[in-house]
Length: 389
Image 1 (cartoon, rainbow, N blue to C red):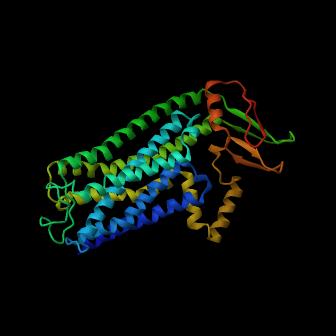
Image 2 (image 1 turned 90 degrees about the vertical axis):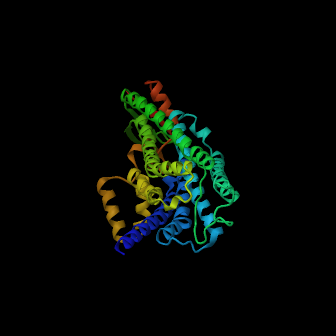
Image 3 (image 1 turned 90 degrees about the horizontal axis):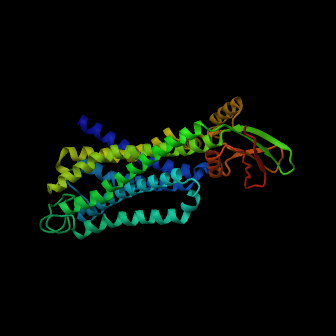
């Protein structure tokens, strides 16, 4: 009785964290202007996948843990298994798209804005979900995953009151190879390439002199002078995003690799009912736990996500708001990340400056390939003059 209670509490906690955490991720990206970028479209897609997993799959998986009989019929059983396979496949392919996005951002920073366009991101996400549906619902509803070629949990061979995910060798090898092992190899290759390029850029950054940028308004009155290293700012910004997403992919591999190894072994042996293997349930719920882990990884590794979480959870608390204002006034900061502050853009008021990032890729290219003074012209008509040296 005690072990069942503890197991029930643990599974309920995983489900609640999965649903609540991924709802928080979606709200954070939607409400925070700093998080509205194309890369985070994939983050939202991954969060939606994990949210659907928490709502449509995990409660029924928990039901099977405590009740060996399936009370909802064979049709819903096959729908539940298809949703499980579809959402897992969508997570893997989304992580592959994230790794490709980071690879393009680091290896081709000058062409990234022209290569990664909103319509291309939309097409990529549509392809991810189309492929996920095709490799989950189609084989299971057509009976391609069973040994005898019939639809699982239907027909005279089906055991009444059971919800079984049947496996045969062709289905297991095809599914695991195309939806896990090959994408895993591609993700590892892209991040190894990113690591090599990041090390090379770090050496170049170490040899570049700091850039002194003075910003003037349209009347040629000096608004402010800021001493920053534009190369360091751009590189650190990309580095932070890459580290965050690499940690997400690493956590995914640690959580799901044991499941796919056992899935492949049991499929090759054509085990009649993998759910009866005790270790299978353990590695399956280890994979499910990854969906609850991702929101915490975003908050732990990314300052913008932490700020958005704080705003969503505590912005309506008056005492916290007053304390936050005192902290900002005492430190002289406005909450913006100083690592991404490359230039100061003057607003309509000549005395007011707004922090922002302009022409980062242009400055990165110029600073890496030349140490000469380069005039930088932001998009708002102000003039930023490089007076390095």
